[in-house]
Length: 492
Image 1: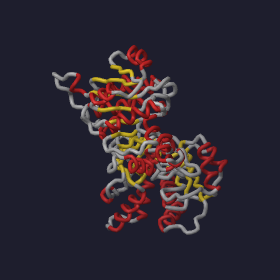
Image 2: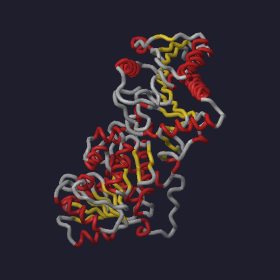
Image 3: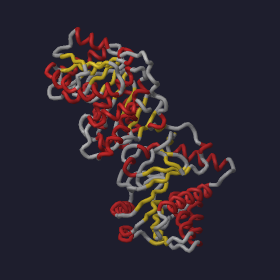
Image 4: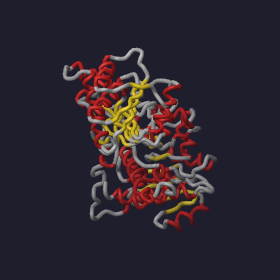
């Protein structure tokens, strides 16, 4: 077993893992029931290590092979001297694997009892083997009640393969889902376990590969974390000057929104950009320049030749933080579109973009779920129900690099889909997205491709949040990220 969220990991859809299981069986090296035994053994090993001081374990088993995994786990626990209670309903048409697992459990001295929510509420350790990867539609009332009882208990919860109720391809659920302390997934990491609701429901994510690695196809997506960003930043030459380090124009900050453009601009500087100019309402010069004198400023009431010169001067552009949805912001976004510079579009730049049918290869769009919903003309719920589908639709409509922010940010360039399970709820405060836009723009200006800048920016931003959260997630501010961004671009 190994931690899936601490090393580079390929991600797969459930149908790909099922195909790998069948290929492994067809090769003659293993049977489906032997795969079940391997999964049960991995779960038993984990329980033996993590709950060595606990004697009583409640196992919840379903009707599919996830239930078979649970029965084998329960058998091994019984044989090791644990006091095991196994609750399950009677399957109408059990698979051969489930039949074999039930027989083994009964031969080990086990007894199957019906689901009992009151007993679940009192359990200290629960093994969740109710539902695996084949979940579709609404859950039955019985399963909903069982899952609710598990989630309201104070037990330490281990989910086998997938927290029951969760869709492993999307990271969402329809009715409800187990909130696990640890999820031990089998074969390979399912792409949905690192994004959306799964970020809360999976808890710590571990993987038991079961010998399927050689049979897996090309992954559907790839995880990125800081450990993969090895030597992303080469040391600067000793004779480097500010002009060598990239120039960025940050455009935004309509009336009352000076803070957004100010945060984006400092994020850009802290990422290593050599020169940063803010193009904003003239009234905001004092706020920007007095609090960060390293920033240059250009007051803009109308889009004139001076504005075009500021755009042309830059290596990369960032537009959107505090831009507003009025004519002032609209005209600035049109000016950015007319430039030939790679750009990052965030916040109100994205809201403006909805009314401007534009598609480019060289921009990075950074929507949160609400902005993504507006861009696609759907509800936020639809976006969050299948974030993988949403990010592909955004790229099809608008092109470029799409950074769909949220718990487990998705980054897609039309060919490569990357999941970044970084950051924490401390980022759920105003200004944090503006900082990310500035970081990505600063990395682009320093010579990284748009995709590299997007991936690096998301990882640096998320890890900076994790470092800042050591003082607590609640009350964390966007400006708290700045010293850690500087630290990380010098360490990665």
